[in-house]
Image: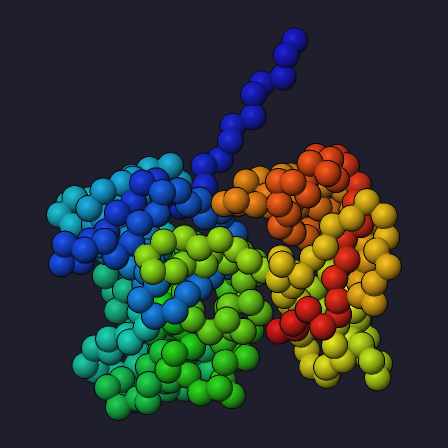
Length: 348
């Protein structure tokens, strides 16, 4: 008797053949993008790259001129279709909450602002009070319920806006430049807060032009450039610092230790440009201090080059020419040495 076929869960968000125009000009064009559930995904890119536009399209706040946007396999409603659907009938509306870069504060107290969505959802008063207090404590604004919201500083407004979103206990939290108005000293606190929200089971999707913040936080990152998806040119390797001596910091990624320039700090991510990773059949005669033997897990076209992914105890990618791939006989399952200098690795 044959086993029943497994049901494949659709991506959290799926985008196909998307086009958004502003004043008749293309502002965002995405042929295909899937965002999986869980963890933290960061949209990166300079101002005007399309990050915020994509975030608004995913949340149903902006209707595309063309293309399909799906949430858990269902079309994302916009405009009147979204208004006509009750909260229970539109999963994006009921499960996703977006925090804008310059959040609007309603007139009234912090409590009234944070409890606004709870009132719309008819959450009982005692439960609303508990949720508001808990959310404000999480963002470092405990005890501010009676302050006037319009008198808050930019950073305080940002934190209250995050608390307002958290009070709704969303399954998906979308944040547009969450550290834009926050003091540098509080940014690490925001990182910790967002990690704790993710660890609690919510999926986070945020955009940031701050590469250090993006690299430290993301499980996945999606680079954009001039309204289009850009090719990833970095290996982003989560891990931790194992030890540091006079010459090197030893960063543990997966089951391997990567040698990096000696730096003191609590680093969570090592970033290695693909162009700095060399592939060879035999160990190279080189001063490079990082050398690992790995197995090819995939080979994909990347423009005029091939992107080769290997398992070296941690996943690492490199770019090779078609001629080099033929000479090395690169293929799935083959084993090669990966070599790169310690100076090529940046820690965040």
